Image (tube, rainbow, N blue to C red; front, side, top):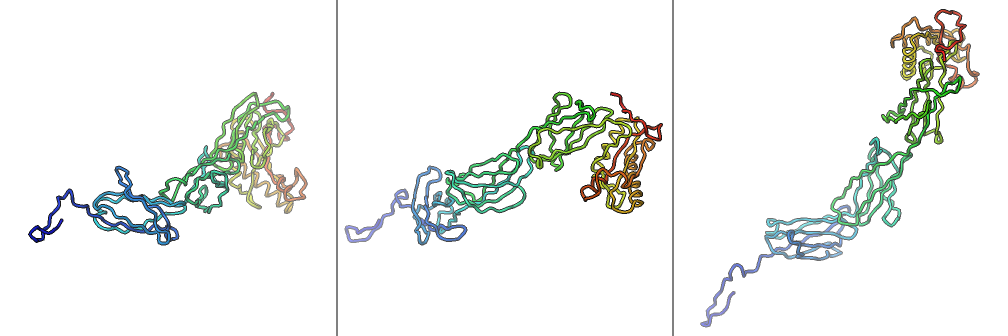
Length: 417
């Protein structure tokens, strides 16, 4: 300090360093809405980052969103900025930052983006679900929803409220998650996964002999028609009864092969179409000579004998049947509808029967066990009076032959019961 000496002379005195006042700096700035860039009335709290002691607490001025504080220089401070309905900001000022005055702009946001990924809990494939958002007290929230891609939605929700997000999807149980946005919010994006449990139904498959109604032991296989690779477990109960738990809304090809001496059966279970199905009756036909067995899903290109690719599955079942019953000989019978001349239909049917035989031979069946014959439009199973009926008449059948009887007059079972 300075003063006047008793003799009238000026003098000064240098305080010891420990008694000298610390240098102060001014840290000022504004708080703004990060979306609109408007000033926000907020709370600015400055504390010691180690001890947590509050050094400064103030509100920004509403009309300007500004704040100003004097702090000791060359020290560490933690700034915490927040406002009702907005996010929080923490910023650490180290000793290098507080050598000189500072001006800083704090940006806080009033809403967050929530990316919601929806999955099947068992198979983990992505789902498109319906989303409902409510506050914790049950009030509906109309939030902005954006579609990103299958199984993902992006929601925009205001900060400062706790939410419950519910997801529903056809044939799945509803699930929900809680999202707390009333606490300290530091990030403007949240990613959440939600898994839905599929609704399931118990189905019984009952396999019988079509001629006696007696139950049969059989091989039952299901193939997912939607190619999602879902493989249901099949549990056999009493003879002929098979129990399966399937997912609602799914569709399956069902392939049933009975004991030796019986034809196979291909059918389907579609739980999306049949909402009440609980038991599927599958009747297997004994392999009898002169009794046609219709082959399903054998189709050709229009006015052509070229097999369509999806016919191969059914023909592969015929290959298995003929392999498991090596003593039988069969006639492949092709039929047409009444569109076109008799001559054209006869030739077309004959070519189609030969195409089927060719496929079987390529697949390993001896050609001397096979006969191809086209019947044209001569043996319809329904009247050719509608497109639907004509489609039924365009078919391929298989008939067991007796290799020693060219008139095919024997009507006995291949395997005696």
